[in-house]
Image 1 (cartoon, rainbow, N blue to C red):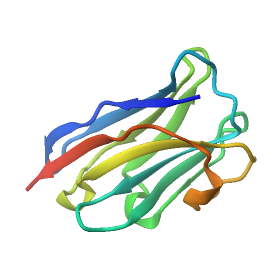
Image 2: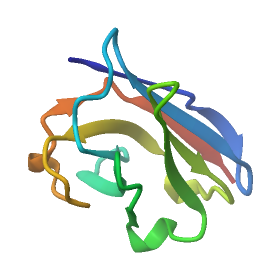
Image 3: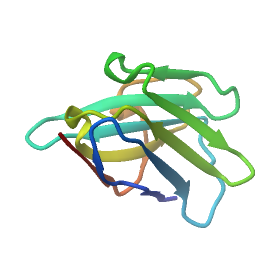
Length: 123
């Protein structure tokens, strides 16, 4: 199963974007979904995760109060609503899915990944 992430783009600081992620051709078969990002010259960073059926969420401190992860079972899609964007949010954003039910921040726990979508926030 592959994931497809889209919705990135160029936005001014203070603006909003909504990223979407869906499996290609199949329903989500994992219990936890997450978003990670990688800025130029930096390592991969956990952003947010959600248990698909329970709806529990967890965020890294730098995005708390600004980003929201959610899922639509009918549309088989996971979203990352990003508000009050800052230049430091500029990165390639990846969605991922993990088999276990846990709000894990470890990329190694996720076994299915999307291709990434670029988010650029201008100052």
